Image (cartoon, rainbow, N blue to C red; front, side):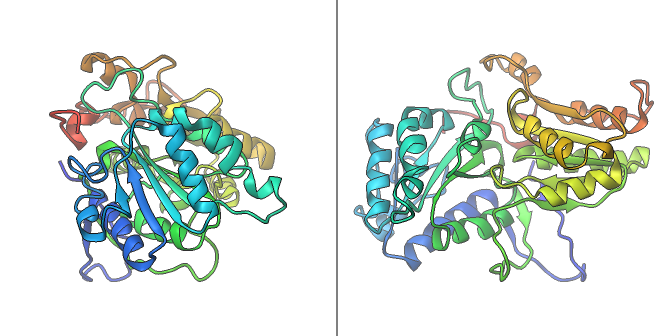
Length: 369
C-alpha cells in the first residue's frame, strides 16, 4: 500500500510531483555529488547490492569509486576517517543500513565530531552527514531494530533529523550538506522507502533553517507531536477520528529531534490543552520525556489532562513477527489513545479502525535488503 501525503495547497487543481521517500534520498545524494566535488559517500553496500535500499544505486558508476565506495566492517575506524576528511575540506556522507551499527562509532561521534569546534575555540568544524536506518521489518530482532535519536540528540554539538516525508528530505538534506557546518545524523525509517508523497514546491528557506519542527495538520482538540513514521500514523488516526468522531487533531512533525520548535509546540498545546507524543523509540528518558519537559517548563498550566505517550514496549525487540506486532504501537493503539485523551474516558464509544501489522500496511518484507 502506497500512502500519499496530502498537499496543503491554495489551488487544489495544481498538479504536483509525486516522489517516493527512496527517490528523494537518491535525488539528494546524487545532487550533492553533482554540485560539490568535495562530497564523498561511503558505507557498507553503497556501491553494491541495491545501494542502501536504492538510495545510492548507480552512483559509484556515475561518479567513480573514489567518491562512492564500500567500506569494511570497521565502523569506528571509518567514522574516524570521515571526521578527518571533514576537517580537511571534504564533505563525507557515511551510511549505515542499521542504526545499531552506529553504536560501534560512539567514541568518534560523541567525543570527537560533536566536540571539535568547542574544544578548539571554533577554529575547526566537522561538517558531515551520517545516515542510518531504523524500524521494524521482517523480524530484525533485538540488535537490529533500535531507534537511538534521543541518545544522540542528548549530546550538544550533534544535530539529529528524522525526515517523515520526501519533502523533508529534499529540504533538509541539501541544506545540511551545503550550509550546515556541523555533524548531522539523519535517521530514516525502512518502512517509508516505498511510500509516495505529493510535493510542495521545494524552495530554499530564505529565513531560518529547515532543521526544526513543522505543523502538518491543524486542529483544536488535541496536539500530537510525532517523529518519523509515527507522523504518518498520526495523520491516519486524525483522518479516522475526524470522520467518525468529529475530533480534530493538530499534528506537529518534530523533524529535527535535537532542535525542536519549542514555540510551535507550546502554542499548540496552549490552544488544545491536550498533548500526545508518539515516538519510534522507548518512552523513558527519550523524545517523549523531552517534549513533556518543554511543555512543563514553558507552559505548565496549559495542560487540561495528563500527557499521553506512545512508543516501543520497554524491552528488547522480539524477533517473532506476532510478538513484534505487539511490541510497536499501531494505528488502533494511537487512535484509541487520542480518543481516550480527548473524551476523558476509556469508554469513549468511538469506532476504532481495523489494523493489520504496520509492516503489512507500509511494506511487506521478503528478505534482508
